[in-house]
Length: 369
Image 1 (spheres, rainbow, N blue to C red):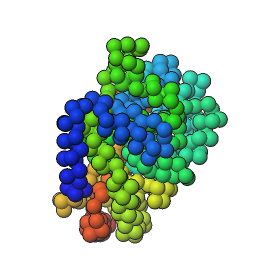
Image 2: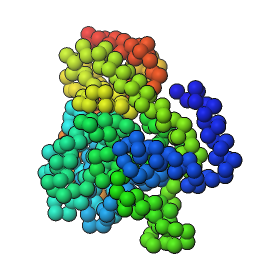
Image 3: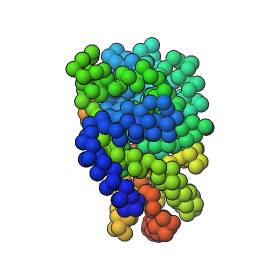
């Protein structure tokens, strides 16, 4: 996917070198505006990484010490780290077993007088149900802060990722649907006050040079990374459609395995799902374990992944939060039952078919054993 854009990348980087505006330069401003508009927001503020986007975005929304923030136990640990960096307390809730997204009924049950915000993680490229999420937040006066690190331009129910809540965080880690050539992140929002606050926080707490009005940090999207992202952004809708088409082919070819308890994580968003990952779920009825299937595919030179093998509340560094094993059975079960299959733009129907044929062969052999 990068090779056809090599000349565009070279030209974009050359312009940054000629201007010498390596920090908060022209390409940063252009990319902030373009990506915010694409995400249904008004303002974009580029930061150093997705984790900082969560931390600084939540802080700019008024979240801090003494507050509780609801997060799914089934997410990458960066979501939790971002909450902790604000001084707030993450409150975990379980996920839906079929979609792997946050269980909004469980989230509602976890609300206390200290709950300030909810962070819906649009996991694997699918949005948490927007209408139910908005209804929940309005009834309980909660801030919605979206973790959209895996959901660049994902859509559902007329909403695009980044347009549902008060603000949203994105990551441009190289493996994302829209990835830089290094780290990068962004907060998008329609709230001018939040946007100004993030700009201040990312730049040493300084609204203008040498005036530091609050403790801040140094977290800025590099101009060269923004130039790369500017060159890639016009192609993102096409890349997302390619991923969705590959996922549809996976769904079709793997459908016969449902009788063995092997199914994909459910898509409730149709073509709005942008499939950052395509995740297969092996229930306890499956004739083969996740590990065995992954190893057998690896022997056939087919790479797989696990997203994620340990739920956040059972990570050794976070046991102090007080959640015991068994607290969130769906998240804990999925960690032992999911396998991510190859998924990237340009994967192509032939390779999807080859992966599915290999899975059928492996499962058939396991069934006969």
